[in-house]
Length: 381
Ligand SMILES: *Cc1c(COP(=O)(O)O)cnc(C)c1O
Image (cartoon, rainbow, N blue to C red; front, side):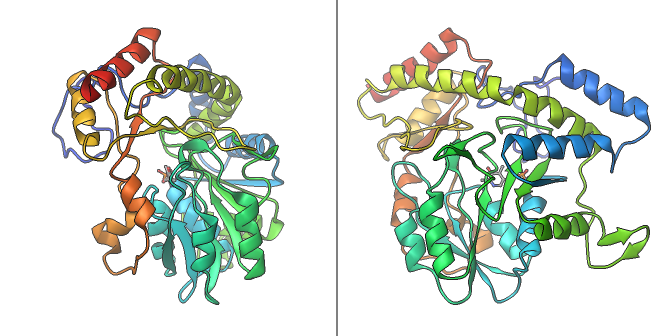
């Protein structure tokens, strides 16, 4: 049996080469006996796709986030594309996205033939800056897509007011924010639609998977068609669709993960508080900002460091066996967006030189938390 020790390639880029895993990984999935039993039951059931587990997973996510509908997908990236397409967005339309995000917030806009317009972020929360978004609205803007960076909700009310004034919609990239709340309400319940991802670095995971929550039954129906070959009756294809389905094994695991969510968020918040207590006294470390009126679910625990020391701190952590990552190198600086105009992203470019995300997962011991802080303190001394 192969183990992580033989095959550590979390980003899928090593092309078969093997590196030893770090002693303290950036993220460790929280999976237990319940998931094993649920997936085993599905395997014996004879129904491996389009089945009752998918429905249960959708119902659990809709209920948890206070939304009328949820549609499950093979992954978060196709779920984003489905969400945009269901809103009728396509060629000639502009979609406002942050650049400080995982690439697929913006590449999924390209996939559907629309034009991503990058907006800047606030230097403290790293979430979309509503003033900069307002400046970038044009008659062609169809949607604003806030990312809830690291699991803390963006300024949804301010963004909603801007969108409303321009006849645009707000579509949340809630990939990192399962269970997060904004002004007392769950993310995914107050906008036109919201996408959640279930890759293994997220707070809950199905290996791969995505879900879109929405209160609009027209979007729910459109997304179900897009997911399943545009099929509205057996072998009757009413529209152009894809095969973007999730498997029953993943969905069954997802049901268990949603049940675990509150426990996971509680433990991650405790670890984040423990890290902040250790890191705040270290000169040069800016610990994560918790904005008012919302909670932080700490999918990421991201500190900001002096730009001229950040890479050395990351190297020193790696030498100490601790995995830290830069979430994210700005999208607008990636070769795939070389042809996309992107000026005035000064905050994004500045914080991109200073951010570093540290392990905050449930498998950390008190000693691990001490070791992370001690490594950074040594590096900055
Ligand atoms: C993880 C993530 C995605 C992509 O989700 P996948 O399920 O990996 O396709 C999109 N946006 C953000 C902000 C993410 O963090």
